[in-house]
Amino acid sequence: MKQVFKTALLIGALASPLAADDLSDEVIGYMDFATYEAGIILPEQLTEDVFGSVTFVDTRSAEQFEAGSIPGAINIEWREVPARLDELPESGMVVLLCNTGSLSAQATFAARLMGRENVLVLQTGLIGWTERGAHKPDA
Image (spheres, rainbow, N blue to C red):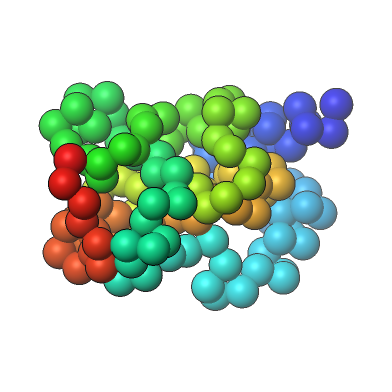
């Protein structure tokens, strides 16, 4: 039941802003203790030895995903991540991405708030990886 409450709270938070009085203790606790680096990875950190062990989740629309993504990525639109959390591995590094990192950051925050500490956002997104990614395997 607690997980259902968290999910409902999170979906509501993503759908419309909440007043400060409406924030749950868990959201406040997360924000109080999260470091500035928590939940992010830079394209430069995706070296060849790291790349092969990552599950990439492209959070853009299906049309954008089909036009091109990081090789091996799966597609779960950013708004669907909370409802499809069970499709993300519970262990190992899971990296969410979009074009710039802003929508995938919201999905990453949701997943981390729901207990998935192994989920990271690719800061600067697909654009950053295309320009500065440390490893770019053949498709």
